[in-house]
Length: 142
Image 1 (tube, one colour):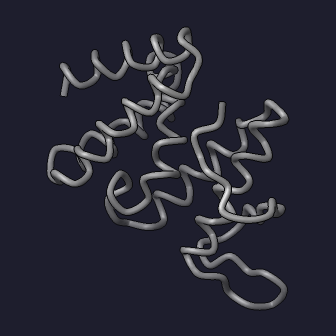
Image 2 (cartoon, one colour):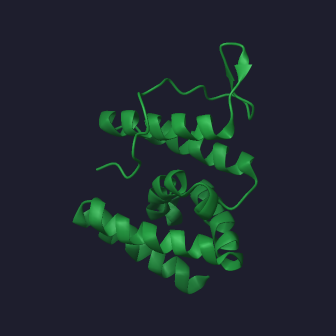
């Protein structure tokens, strides 16, 4: 089951620049985030989230703020890739950024803990168990 809630109709994601262009004008970060959430639902239904994870990571890196407290829905969905932490350098890089943010922001920590509860409630038992085991280990290391 998808953890992002669609806030509107599914739209095609324009993957290119930080100031995404949509029919000749620049869209806001809020619109970009809304489109990203809608695309997650669309691609999750198709069982193809690989490109979404890349787009979400790029979006969050461009924002320059705290991911868990400023973009919790996108970050929660992206957090699902952390189960692959030991197998992917790019996932390890994402965790390094998340970990640094978690160390300095209590609001990020609260959002991160809420996401863990949601993983347990919304993912299949097998998926949740695998993800939460990795998160517990990473938290201990942090």
